[in-house]
Length: 511
Image (cartoon, rainbow, N blue to C red; front, top):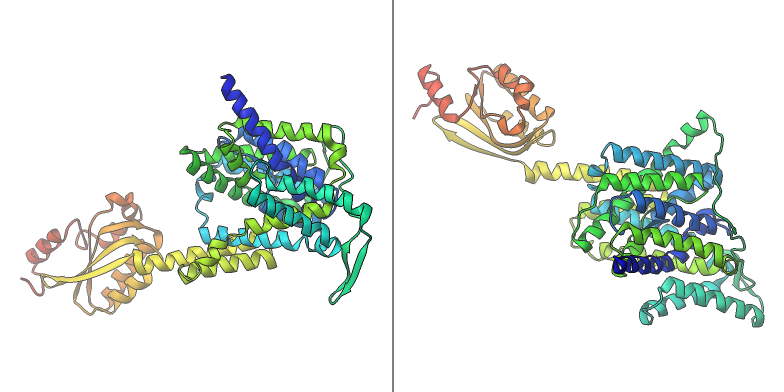
């Protein structure tokens, strides 16, 4: 027991070291100024603790992430920071509802090209958001990136982001004493600052986060619903993707709906205490796992460690230059980009590549939720087309003078065009549709059978239906399809139909 507690404690402290610079940097990204650093830190503390306490993924660490940061940044820009906290609170409530309604069972079906597309778009937005610091404090950003690259390659003990944070801050303090301000005027850039006095975080509260209970009317709440849904949906997707990664590494199975409820509780409380919303963070969760963290305790310890850092070392954190955080964010965006998705574009089906590219472009150019929505719709349409071409088959044969069409696979709206085209072009007097190998039937597929029956009857042809729907949940019986065909039009087997036709002298070409 003692060894387990020790392992979880050390893992939580290790993760807090990784989470600290990212929490500060993502918070700054959200507001565009030094005020954001503390709300990012609050987000890691509050959402990280309560999502771990109530969540359904062992060892998962929650805090500000790329997707959540981009969503929150847009809300702050359009609605203001106070309303953004309300949207975060509402987003948490939506996540709790998702969990109660068991929506976690469906969110995991987001197609991989869509995930790659919006993650790549987020990486680009994060990098673009720091360009003001590239032109406003170039040397500091450059040195931070170099420090981080060196740490990633040669220093394994200290996380690269923390190493860059420490070295970058020290370097700025030293450079400000010996290097004069250097400004240039460049094409398209009025004032390019190579080096000057760097802006600091400056404000780290000494006490605990304060409860915010803003009074808003119904109109504001309605206005914030789209923003809150964005936080809920993207935060849920982000968290469950991390849960899958954790499952693959541990060989366990997470509880997706419980995880959504835990994430919702964390974000609800975060919104009430003026914190950024969060989601399951893959890198931090993997670090936790590799450091020995196997339960929710290590993730909770990570949040407590961040709180203690804020209370004890807040004055030191106030000296961190914003340009150093910008350099860390740029490297975060570069490492976040899914380069494999670009390398395999030539090997993937073109349709999947198109989904990924469209999702990525829409994420950057328009909106993250729009991009995900369009990507999912495109993927669904492509899937339906593939199913109609490959997943569904229609085979034909002639048996005892009857033209028999055997349907194989899902009889759904995506397959109706092929069935109609094939059977409508057949001029045989007696046609049989065999549904014995049909795996799924939807309303469109079921009604198509009646439409074909009526269409052929008008042309003087007979259509017979062979097979039962016991494996299909009895949907054809429930929709009265068998009843409409009647006892002279529907038979359990082909042999029963042939016996009937012979007995009634209706077999035109008997064998």
